[in-house]
Length: 401
Image (cartoon, rainbow, N blue to C red; front, side, top):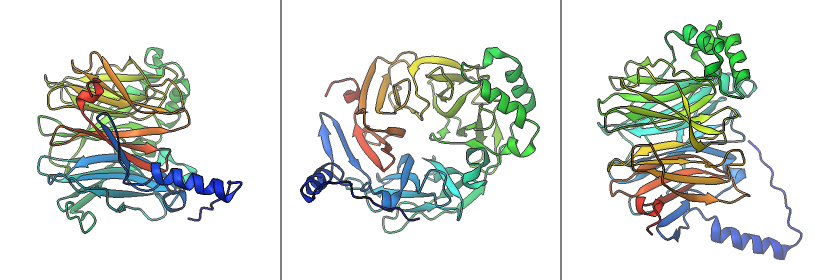
């Protein structure tokens, strides 16, 4: 990959001024405080070194370290795209990035991680088998597991890795029902319906094009649920494993077209709640619930929360409150990134504060966690040039500090 830098500065004096500004605001480990909010870049923004940097995920290791990952490459679909990671030692700073996964000559995209009850690290991502000519429709899911990921002197060592081919039962019936009944097609999704009709007869299309983004959920039952959606059919499903990834089955897709990148939390009564990125002209976060541990889902409805067609993530805190991180604008650019707090498990969202709000910026594809000490941490793409890490409290969302 060769990227060329261009000089746009009319004078050396102006260039020195810009360099000074960059040194103050863009150093990778320069933190700042805003009454309870602190933030820093995981690495120095550098197109020459990192290219297009996007789609981060974050976990806290048992020893208290934070581990973040993302993908980077010349573009988001180019053959050099690979998954990078970095570690923040507990009480320390972010270390140098290291390689987490790479398929030679193909693009590896949208990683998401989780640490299970056996303290194993899981990494999910998809590889674009068709290369840059046929990008998202050729996505093929994969995952890795590691028990050796806390050594601060070496990268993650994988103990197990496997492919995850998707096979949704009754796909013909569900897609046909959606295609034939306009009640399930949101405004602006007619093209998705036509696309689904075209590809339904193709056996390869049934298995490819399923993409992940948000963190998986480990249910109170112990089952792991991986949310995903089809770039071909415009619908969602959940991959569920009851035995730590040895076998998988897939949920019935919820009725509703034009959804992407679901994110999940489990209510206190065991009901699963899914929120979806909107791929239609509704410009609203959409939702569905499951009362049988993710096997079947209610028809998808639109919420009152705006969405410009960008990624989001939801998290249930240990006290039962729910936090949602998302772009709270109706259309691009993704120039504002919000965190909203619900005290009633998603029925209402009375508190919202903004991590970013700049008309010239792009802040998207966030990931969220609650650390052992109760503090919240988020990572997200910052102008697709670096990954930003921020830390804040629930009280900060409520405006108490």
